[in-house]
Amino acid sequence: MKKILAAVIALSCLSAVRLPAQTFNWSTPAKYGTGEQSSVSMNSSGLVVEVHKSQTSNTLFYHVVKLNRSNGTVTWGKSQVTTTKAKAAANPSVALTQNSNVIIVFDDTLLHLRYMTGTLNPTGSVDQSMNWVVTDTQYDTGRAPQISVKSSGTFVEVHQNNDDARKLFYRYGYVDPNTSSPNITWTSGTRGIPYEIGASAHISLKRPIYPG
Image 1: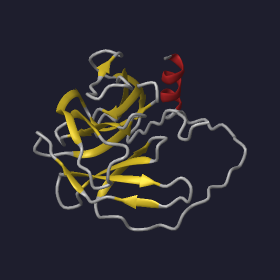
Image 2 (image 1 turned 60 degrees about the horizontal axis):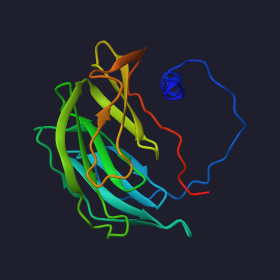
Image 3 (image 1 turned 90 degrees about the horizontal axis):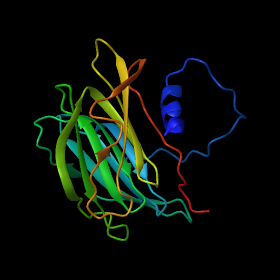
């Protein structure tokens, strides 16, 4: 767990580490929908989940997507609304586990952080609907949460407290990688742990995307 915490703290360090130059092979940009504040996560089977906020309201939507690893083609499902108990939802972030369980975190625009979980069929249609397990539940205070999960089920969440103080916090926990009824266990405690001054933090944990 110390390695994970070190990685979180390193996100906001001002010093840079020089790495060997690499070149991305970018695909041609293609429109897939409308909205803002998009977040995406993929597992090794090529299943992808994208979430975003509507550009005209505080409503969240998601797409189920499949990547064909043999030729790089992407198949998008229909846009589907994410039903929340909160009247408003913004700044979503999604994490997809190896067995196709989904964790979504967001804020309700009133400095309440919320999460919800669901499951997908990895061999199902891209137009399948999410099977929601945990409906949106408050887990902390703040805004703009981001989450990333490892294949082991360990995850890290980061967020800022508000726009004025601009303090960044992290939390970590565990979700059973083999369950069909995913829920979150917060192993770091009941509240976020401060680690830096800043805004709009992001987090990504190293995990194998492709087997081998």
